[in-house]
Length: 532
Image (cartoon, rainbow, N blue to C red; front, side, top):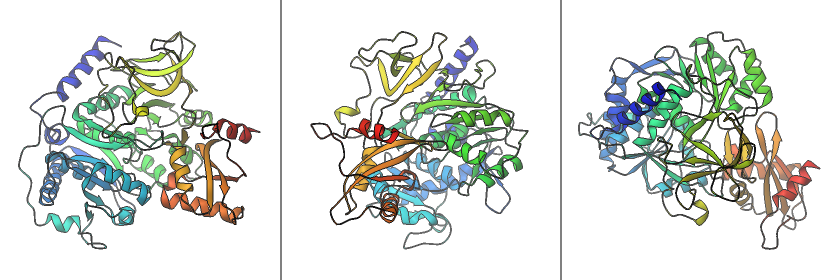
């Protein structure tokens, strides 16, 4: 890393840590009011550009509306919303009151959403009309976007008519909490992570050094903002940088995505590998010669996708990170840091991060070429802001070594002699499907809530397009017969009671789940059965 990059990192950190500045100042108010903040692509209509001045005005009125509903400093404001202009305005409006924003992935079933909302103690939930049915009953107040009330939920636009702009100053300083976001639950239950303003500095650096995002060109992150990767790359980091970016209101479709790339002449594009694979397989695929930089994160880039990106004229650069850390490893685009992508490798630590591979049996670095535990050297990583999960903790939630020197990702990797990192393995129970880290335990618990299911165990099957798919092994209760009809019934059950992104695409009916002496499922046996 060059001295110039070191200085830039220090400048980013000093800026975000300035004690007298609030989040609304950093993310909106200090920017040129006439500068485009978001270019919103709407289905069937022309894209609309919204300036930072419009964002400031809309967010101030939303802040007044939220305050009238009792929202104050430290309260949670959640959303079930598509990528419209109202989404960043809502986030900024909450911050003006010192409230914390909680994104909820719109594909979650009501039960899974209710757990997250209850744990966050959300005060207000804002939903688009099409997602209103996803919002469970609770102590929170529900608003629906648009101008018309739906199902008893007041309309946001109508509520705003009675409120002027909020004028009071927001809480200032780098340690003000901004976001409460839940992990995908890879260890059996989603864990709550609270990010302060300080955390956003690492994401700004990622846009500058990882994506090499400059003031010119058209930038588009197609990642869903219900998860941290999309929240920061599609919304918050560009706002912090004062950089306009594209928001697509419509649900993802391969054809319309190709249209956006072509019609808006996108130069910088980041998406999950699954999104890219669907686009690759689409009959609407085409050359987009203005595309200069292509990036991906959330899961491994498969060989077919890696080769296909060459046909586009720009290699896909892969990045790695977690909800807790942000993106910290990869193949940066920045000309001073550029690292040509290597199939099957993770890349190198990004500026501001010191990533190490520890021995499996002790907390010291493993020799090059040896599989070990992927970890973050906390003191040597100025962008490392995570200190622990929010709320009640279980012993297995501890992610730091006993001396606090290292944060443990729970992934396994190999460090090569040239400093390149290669992903070796992961917690064998985690399923990486379509960019989501899925917890087998959560899916098993959902299945076992069905009256026909006696026992269930879930593993991941390799899949060309999704990385892995969920494969459920099910023992039925007496009186229930296996078959295609029962398989489809269980798939619908998981979709409705857990989430459409996590249903088992393969269901096998067996007589007994293999377990250890103390009753733990032996998933390795199921994997061997699957392989056989």
